Length: 112
Length: 114
Image (cartoon, rainbow over all chains, first blue to last red; front, side):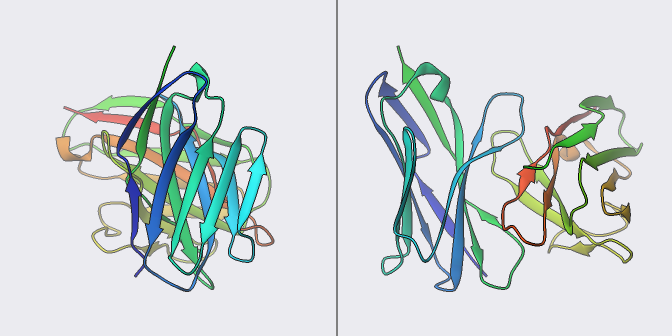
């Protein structure tokens, strides 16, 4: 089955700087890659996703890049703000499979 | 995006008892899933809640411990049976519409078993 690895497990960034979180996946048939943000005491919230026919997608300060050859995808957050502090999870899903496989999570702390 | 609510939001239970968690979606969805998130950990899929048929369980999870109901396209329940302290977790439901790949999470139910 699919295996998703996520790095780093913790990340501290000065406010205003950029943050990058990376994930690798094992199943070359995976074609959908969402990112979730989980704030303390809340359920995960979808922040951006990308499909395998696209190499990059941006939404304001958030972007995701996908390298299908290397089987890795990354979340980029620019101009970080204190409200970006949360745990971020990447996930992957294979074509024809309804289930998501999640990474282990990254705790992002923005230092004011 | 679908709006998902869960009840209860949190509970403290005694070992040996059972708790039923409800999940309500504001629109009809094809797929509903139940996840467990142990303290400080990632999300582990428990089962897929199928409308009109038995749930499909992942390895390590069994129907006797986690019975699931899905009576219609907007509602599902998960029961945590004969609880032990190891069942202390956040339990989350998600929904997915047939023409969209996206899964949306509910707010979660925080369970503490003493």
